[in-house]
Every structure is written in structure tokens, then in C-alpha cells.
Length: 184
Length: 192
Image 1 (cartoon, helix red, strand yellow):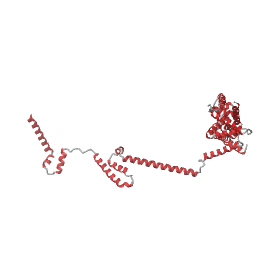
Image 2 (spheres, each protein chain N blue to C red):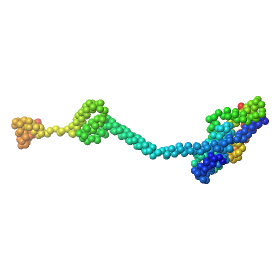
Image 3 (cartoon, rainbow over the protein chains, first blue to last red):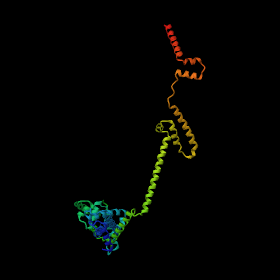
Image 4 (tube, one colour):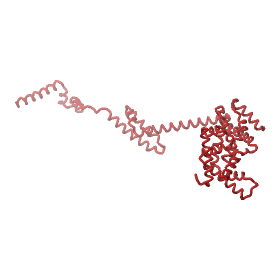
């Protein structure tokens, strides 16, 4: 860990209750997951990093972490909500275009790359048009780091409900893409 | 179908494989430290204020309190005076004697601005006059004089009238009354 990280570790260890989880260790353990969760919603690296920082600020402002039974779903829920709030205040179309361009292979020709970008943008647009619960389940499942039970805790839903939502989201997305994205 | 699934998978894979920027953890920890330090300063800013600042603040509060009390009392006084000047019945009935009522009414009118001194004086004299009349009318009117009293008054003014002086003698007066009664009795007996 870097010097600043060690300093933070000492600071938190001195000022916080000893039995509480250390925020510095929480950062090193969960920041990657939180970044991917935020990125799945925002599709922008800088914005996702800001969300991760805001998430840990919320953690620090929390009076005690002893009440938090399961840290991972709790942190993911904070990051998810912050990302959704931030997405409303930004221009997601531009971010989606940049993200789609970054996914296109560099070896293909310009025309083929343009077609690929357009098709991926359509997928992203249709994902945004999904019902909120289905969209959130689809994005959380894309991260592939959370179990179905954990996703249920993040979204306050049962495991079976999460599975059903994920199935419906994939089915609906595929149908809409095949129909040309006109159906809702 | 295949291209749609392919696009979906590429998108989901892109989201899954997103890597955190280099040095993100370090930046986050640094940001947290700065945020916590700023929060601590802002929360303890009042407590860190020097003693002189607290003293000045307390003095200012006291001054404000005194001004507020003064304004409140002034307002109360003016309201009271307005009520008395309007001639509220309570103020009039509280005074048992007219002699004490007059100065209070004058006092109610007195605190008008200095520009109206003459008017104040005039109002004062009129008010005093009205109150004097009220005082004189307060006792019950005198009873009418009896016959004897009226005679006494006449005697006092006409010392030389012998008939009046004789009427003051009880024996003469009794004799005269007996004569009058006899005349009345005689009159009615003759009628029968």
C-alpha cells in the first residue's frame, strides 16, 4: 500500500472504533467492484471513479459500520444509487458513443467499425429503455461478481425475483433488438 | 439474430471487463482524507473561535436583548396611553373621586409631541372643566326645604316682619293651626 494509504489506515485506526471495519481496507477490497458497477451505469471512467469516491465518503460519514450486516451489497447499493443520480445530470448519449467506439476492434475497416458502433449503440439504447428493475438486474449481472442472492439484497428483491427479472430483461432486449427497437 | 446476440455479449463483456484507472485507490484515499479534514474544520469552526470572539458575541446578544426589551416596553406604554386617551370605561370607573380623575386624563394627553404644546394646554383646561362639572353633579341634589326652614330664611332676610316672627313662636303657630282646623271643620259641617 502506498504511503498515503498507510497514513489513512493509521488515521482511521486511531479515530474509529477498533471493532469497526477499516475504511482503507474497504477501499482496497471493494473499489474495483464498485467501479465496475458505476461504470456499467455511467459508461464513463472519470464519472465512475467519482462515484466510487462518493460511495466511500458516505461510508466515512456513517457513524458506525457495525450496524451494516453485509458490507458488499450495502456498498454496491450506495454506488448504484449514486450512479443513477449522476446519470440523470450528465449526457449519457455522448458517453455511450465513446464507450461503443472503445469496444470496436481496431483491425476492422472504418465502415465496418461504424456499423458495429451503431449496432452497439442500439443495444445500449434499448437497455436504457428497459424497465428500471430489469435494467438494474441486467447491469449487475453483467459485472459477474455478485451472486443472485447479493443482487437481491442490493435491489431489495428475492432471489427468484432476481432470476425472473434477469430472464425477462434478456428476452425483452433481444426481442426489441430483433424488431428494430421500435417496440416498447 | 446472431449479430444481435453478438452485440449484446460484446456490450456486457465490455462492462464486465472495465478496469479501474490506475491509482484510483490512492486518489480515493487522498480525497477521503481531505474531505474528512474539511468536514472536521467546518464542524469545529465555531468551537475554535477565540475567547474574545465569544465575548463580543455575548455582548452583542445582550445589547440586542436590551434593545428588544426597550422596544417592547415602549410599545406597551404607548398602547396603554392610547387606551386611556380613548376614554375606556375601565379607566373612568376606577377612579372613585373626580379630583383624582382629572390629572390622569391630563397625563394621558401630555406625552404628545412638543409642537402641540398650546393644543395640549387647551385640552387640559377643557378636560378639567368637564371633570369639575361631573364632580358637582355627583352628590344627590338637595332636598326641598321644609316650611319652617323657609320661614327661617325669610326671617333672616326680613328681620322687621312681626308676623313672621310671631309664626316662629310655637304657641302662636299652634293656635293658628287650630283656628284653621276649626274653620275647615266648620265649613264641612255647614255643608252637611
